[in-house]
Length: 498
Ligand SMILES: *[C@@H]1O[C@H](CO)[C@@H](O)[C@H](O)[C@H]1NC(C)=O
Ligand SMILES: *[C@@H]1O[C@H](CO)[C@@H](O)[C@H](O)[C@H]1NC(C)=O
Ligand SMILES: *[C@@H]1O[C@H](CO)[C@@H](O)[C@H](O)[C@H]1NC(C)=O
Ligand SMILES: *[C@@H]1O[C@H](CO)[C@@H](O)[C@H](O)[C@H]1NC(C)=O
Ligand SMILES: *[C@@H]1O[C@H](CO)[C@@H](O)[C@H](O)[C@H]1NC(C)=O
Ligand SMILES: *[C@@H]1O[C@H](CO)[C@@H](O)[C@H](O)[C@H]1NC(C)=O
Ligand SMILES: *[C@@H]1O[C@H](CO)[C@@H](O)[C@H](O)[C@H]1NC(C)=O
Ligand SMILES: *[C@@H]1O[C@H](CO)[C@@H](O)[C@H](O)[C@H]1NC(C)=O
Ligand SMILES: *[C@@H]1O[C@H](CO)[C@@H](O)[C@H](O)[C@H]1NC(C)=O
Ligand SMILES: *[C@@H]1O[C@H](CO)[C@@H](O)[C@H](O)[C@H]1NC(C)=O
Ligand SMILES: *[C@@H]1O[C@H](CO)[C@@H](O)[C@H](O)[C@H]1NC(C)=O
Ligand SMILES: CC(=O)N[C@H]1CO[C@H](CO)[C@@H](O)[C@@H]1O
Image 1 (tube, rainbow, N blue to C red):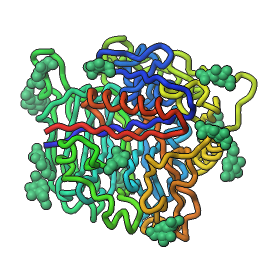
Image 2 (image 1 turned 135 degrees about the vertical axis):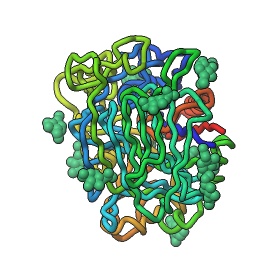
Image 3 (image 1 turned 90 degrees about the vertical axis):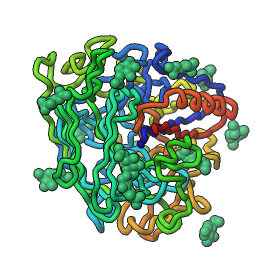
Image 4 (image 1 turned 180 degrees about the vertical axis):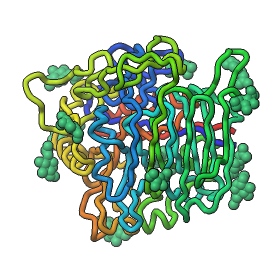
């Protein structure tokens, strides 16, 4: 029994213009104007073209920006939140940061850690590496979330939906689930369990050792599962259905048991989530505590096409297997949120750079005019200040009455960040409202705003259920077009496997 996938699709519609959504999937690629297909199955520019842009369903594979090559990192998340960039404004400059986030993060000095939070009714939080790994060893020291319906995940995930997973279901804290996917194809027999002591109470080291011919999943240095590539051969298609393409590292907390999810997902998640559990009423959120992540790169496979050393691309228009990947010096960042792999500097104003830091990647759900600030500093400012400024920018330029429909807040828009916030600042992704969350903790002065994560960078643990996703996205799109006012949409689509 196991999961699959969570997809958080979020978008902003900031105009009164009736909008049209372009969806993408195996049968429909994105149009030229919105060439990049996000994991949410939506077409857009900017953030849609970096991160986990899917080259298979984009206008052309080149619409997706190349992934920055693997980089050895040893990150201690102690007092680290200010170094993590907001994925909503991040345009791919991996030299600016090793990690981005969507959702809610805060420092937790007491345990020298970072809290990934999931306030009431929210989609949770995802932390993503800015560099890809193309074979390597990735380990994380963390305490998982707990209670039914609450999922913590640590995964490697590629644009074509190759995926290697650790997942924890909050209703069973002694089981660590492992799984893998090849190109998002469902397979009901790929999961496996590792038994440990309580994952909520204890820090454990979880390691994925991803090599060309095998993968091991380890807990505290003990291998709990091994998968050989040769076990994944499909006779019919004569393919190794083995994760084999450059992948980002994601750590996330998400509501598998949210009542709006598919019944099978809720069952897998251990039941419906209780949004009035003490975690919510006392802390203001469910949480995962992250202490450390190490990434150790292995070299690329022998025989790889190498025309540089900076980035990974797919060299064949139709092939997305190991042999289709090449290493180049192609640029990895966009000049603006209008940029795409075909024209990274589209939308960059020539004369001078604008000072606004607000950035909404352009999608087919937003009209041209909704992107007020065309420029985005390559190095986004720190998450906190970015969100503050963009809040201001957004709410002054628009009628930023945030609809209460997506208020993530618990009691009367107030989140009490009591447990983890003693001296920390709270960062959250951008933002259309500055008032949805206000910390009441005397130690936290910052405003915690609702988050809007571009769908290209949202809590992506996705693999399957594209059809469900398509359907839901379309409905949401219609809704947006109908309301036609400043409105944020947050849509969680989760799919499941029995
Ligand atoms: C981005 O950040 C990197 C490293 O912090 C720095 O070297 C580079 O100059 C910055 N670029 C811009 C445009 O600020
Ligand atoms: C969770 O379900 C509630 C309804 O119970 C809904 O309002 C909310 O949007 C859902 N959250 C997510 C992230 O799907
Ligand atoms: C990360 O690497 C450091 C240095 O080698 C090591 O001390 C630490 O235990 C590692 N952490 C994890 C989670 O693997
Ligand atoms: C957790 O899952 C394991 C493996 O399926 C099972 O043996 C164990 O009984 C479960 N524990 C609880 C508390 O459900
Ligand atoms: C793994 O454990 C979960 C309970 O935590 C159980 O439902 C599932 O069947 C187990 N999977 C396998 C492959 O044993
Ligand atoms: C797969 O490869 C491993 C290691 O090379 C070997 O031990 C195993 O027997 C092989 N399995 C199959 C099914 O070929
Ligand atoms: C092999 O691929 C075919 C075609 O996609 C599929 O129908 C079949 O189920 C696969 N076999 C296995 C063992 O996964
Ligand atoms: C954008 O705004 C300009 C001027 O404010 C207007 O002329 C134009 O029609 C608008 N375009 C869209 C797509 O709303
Ligand atoms: C936006 O605000 C202006 C002035 O406050 C008001 O006249 C207008 O009707 C509002 N538009 C919407 C869509 O709420
Ligand atoms: C918010 O709720 C708290 C307790 O739940 C209450 O004390 C406070 O007065 C409320 N504030 C507002 C503005 O309603
Ligand atoms: C792709 O999306 C279109 C339009 O939403 C839908 O008709 C079609 O069934 C989808 N195809 C797949 C394979 O999901
Ligand atoms: C670019 C920009 O407007 N930066 C401002 C962000 O907000 C802080 C204070 O909240 C200002 O000091 C910055 O100048």
